[in-house]
Image (tube, rainbow, N blue to C red; front, side, top):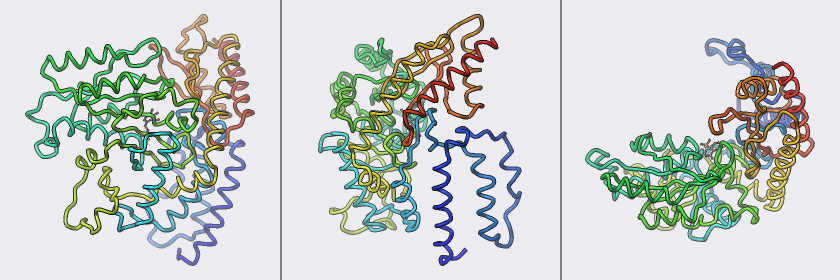
Length: 471
Ligand code: PLP
């Protein structure tokens, strides 16, 4: 394929995309394909001579969509949505057309400067203090790993980078059991070790108990260990639990420990002033992560980390051999100094398109609707015989199960979930709560309507009645 053929095929791709989005409701949300079904349809080896674009495009249409779970389906109520507003998809197309590698200011000044301005737009939208500066990563997992590495080096006075961790006392990090497993992964990858990530007791609201946190730090110091950081959780993955940040971040200040807050999902809701009390104290954090690709509408991947003082993270992550040195360093930002990979995509463009094409009011409206419809779905299921609400809505997420009847409630809830997803009209996933198997329902897809949520309730009721009868 040559460049002069691109307009024709781009037009076909755009038409296909428009049709795909317009007809998503006709498809099962979760792919119904069996293991191996897709790979069997693909040639075993690469072609020696070029295939025609007609053949390649036809194969795409015939093979790939059937094997996809449709994350942009308006009845996607599983995991957390990974949204893609049309304006952000368009920006990705343009960024793809330029295909720049934006590691340094001089390799793409517009990408670096747009990132600086967009991070400030988002900072204002989230009502964070002016001192915070942001950087875009691929994922919250990466942002959290950056924060944990910085936490480690802050405590070791940046000696670990050269010396490694041998010879230092065990380093300890504190978080609640509600934090996402990306925190566990960061503790493993940063050489701190899973066993040194302390899951602090929580209270009746599943928020970390400040007294238990203080005690754990004291005990560890007394045992010769080195407490290095605290990770707060806003909108945990299982059922949306949040820590009371002010209390725990004050402890991190008292103890001279670095802090990071994971608000990957619920952070987007902070564009709505009425939710900001939930992260009261956020201004005390050294680092926090919000994923605009989850709830705001920026297409995957787009995770934003805000830093009170980027210098600590830059000192941890920056490496500048001669071949990467540039001039005018005082006036510019080289964002690869703030992140793990050297190479960087032009992600700021989709934030710019998204925020301008919708405006904050429309984005707020969508989030408010999602939260209101989650409450409606929860209320409707609560009055459904045989269904038990396990956790009430936090933001736009609640959990439920089939109430214990004659059989095993875990088994019948598992069966309910399996039948719902095989049916295909909606997609839900599970978690465990106090040792019980529960189903999560979260409303967050960009194009979801109230009708879609009402349909979810009907589908759950219908299939729950059938499963209950079978058992
Ligand atoms: N934090 C929370 C609260 C999450 O729910 C998730 C994923 O769902 C993550 C972090 C990890 O996000 P990512 O896929 O961007 O690494």
